[in-house]
Length: 292
Image (cartoon, rainbow, N blue to C red; front, side):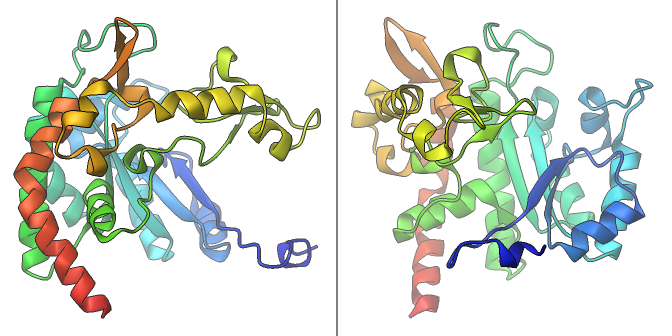
């Protein structure tokens, strides 16, 4: 039975997959193209940076394998976005990261800050990303992106795109930039449901498929507590000139001191917005003019 025969009227379904790309083959590429999947490919900037943390089962760097997979997907005209985790080493080379990904033919890029292991103090690992390093990386990355935009060679960087859309009064594409948790659920292999992929933890288990409906879990105590907690933004947001653009950032970046949340990456995001806001406003005005 085709999905179109079982979908409720007015319901639209889209498919995407996030993968390191190592095990994808021609059959997978054909399937992904046929079913119109968007493929997010984990590709951390450039070879040495990627290989430092992404190794295969034999302990060898996986960059060459992933780049071959990218070429195969592009040959089959599969829509591919790059997901780059910004580590300490990655943050030191924004030009190399951006230019390498562009040369690979990728026009849609997403950069996410590297996370330290759960329960550990931030910044203790060799790959750990400090807010200062992240802020410098974002500012330089923005300059490279803005230069391309001015020359008509636009490449999408999701964070920057989101800020432009926020300035336009549109919805942001991620919950971390719109300041609202609860936009999706995560289903684990055993049917357990959680409110976010960053919070697949026992304390946030909402229930299990088959025991309750998604609507029942969404209105349940755990889900409501999760959303309510995220609505309490860090105190310093109220005095920040960019509070209504940043919205406090992702709750997963909050660290708690004296019972109050503080965004670990606050100084990084503020450095970016202090640096980039005039250009972001320029882009938003150009976009608004193009819509008229």
